[in-house]
Image 1 (cartoon, rainbow, N blue to C red):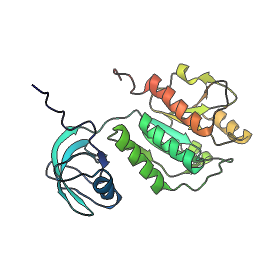
Image 2 (spheres, rainbow, N blue to C red):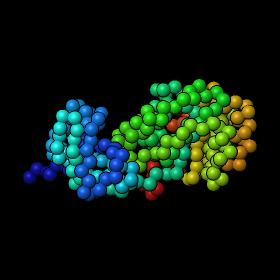
Image 3 (cartoon, one colour):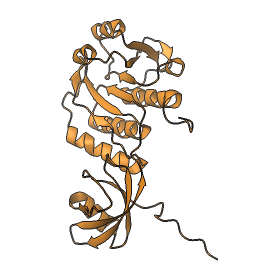
Length: 249
């Protein structure tokens, strides 16, 4: 006797909707998302979708009506609650577009709770298009299965970041001059990783960082890493040491 196919199929598309979802909701999808589902995925009435709203978790829905430019959905059932991610911030100096997009995408996939652009003295890119970065976050969450979007903070200058730093949050400073390996640092949540721009921090900035009460100096190995590599490498190491990568976490 043939096995009953899994439902919903593993290939079911996931979609973020910035509207509260509930059993009696009938959300409508239009714009670019509808174009993608209708014309690229060739979806039709009765096809399943997984939805999440960054509020209530993930829901299974089916297409009730497929028009030319919009889809009306029917909520079928609640699949899982909104996840609780580790309380890790990634504070990073913005870099050029493609590399910045990569930082946002990978940090979201790795599970950070907050993305904080930091303007330093050597930061080349000072204007950050928040709308575009938010779109990168949404796309990464849809792909990796997250049900909780990371917070995207407005850019802040390094002195202001340090002046308002929460006293209970460890600040892990990726220092090119050396420090303790991150894998050996006892710095569980709440914590934050700070990585610098291309060219690194200036001597004045480094002096301010080393004098800060929350600062924990760390090294990321013997080689000089690109800014985006350092940000993601540090995030991965912290998640393996203190995050939710372990089944027991």
